Image 1 (cartoon, helix red, strand yellow):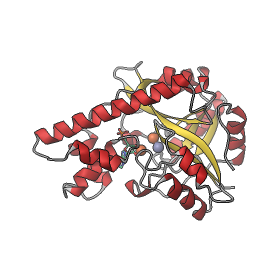
Image 2 (image 1 turned 180 degrees about the vertical axis):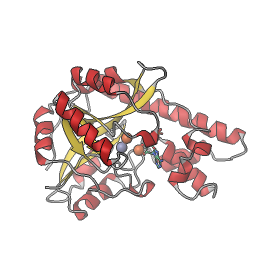
Image 3 (image 1 turned 60 degrees about the vertical axis):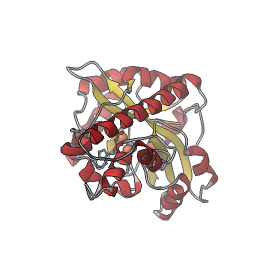
Image 4 (image 1 turned 120 degrees about the vertical axis):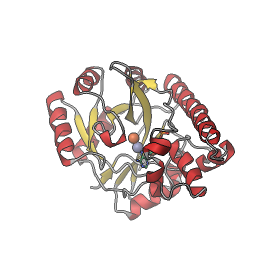
Length: 282
Ligand code: AMP
Ligand code: FE
Ligand code: FE
Ligand code: ZN
């Protein structure tokens, strides 16, 4: 069984449509794929409709959360599986985050424009194609101008990594956990040690999250070193948390391939047994 529980489509900042994504997953030899776009369930229906025989789809999303308990707020990503997409509190919170992402990206366009970089908001919206707007869509605009050659380059500190980056208006981490659980979902901390992306939260927060209902840790991820992966497995063992491994595939916006990291069947079984808001398709 090859199980990849983290992938993005054009419903957020991936480059494959949901239909293409599930086709690629089958072609990559995966048996199970979770569709986990940022702050949206928009890709679910198309993915289900295009599901190739032999592939099971776990419905999910990757929530933009923020921890306010440290010296300064730290953003983190929480994967949520098998929740009810129609549960009003969670659906409402996700809709607010998506709107805030648009306001924020528009302000980033203004910052760039003020420096004479004439990308337009309309163009960024076009790259987002109706999905959740994110910095990768601004990166597309910078690439189109020939200012950077790759999305990775666009995330350098002098561009979207710091100079023109504005923080998102994310959901408080404990509130996010409560919303996921309230919608019958299973919360898993995405790439908890990915320091390459920015500041990471302390272990003490993971302990608190576990007490508040966190189900597990995405221990195996290409943004973790082998030592960080081992640390996350050890921590999960101590706290009784489930561990997963996933690619966090983003199509051509990143170099990682589907199935680059995978999840053990026993971990998936525990997630499926805990999910109460929706079911695995196929
Ligand atoms: P945002 O959610 O708008 O803050 O943008 C963050 C997204 O950009 C992440 O979900 C990744 O998909 C992508 N990303 C973050 N860092 C990098 C990087 N160094 N290179 C390429 N893509 C990145
Ligand atoms: Fe992303
Ligand atoms: Fe993430
Ligand atoms: Zn992701």
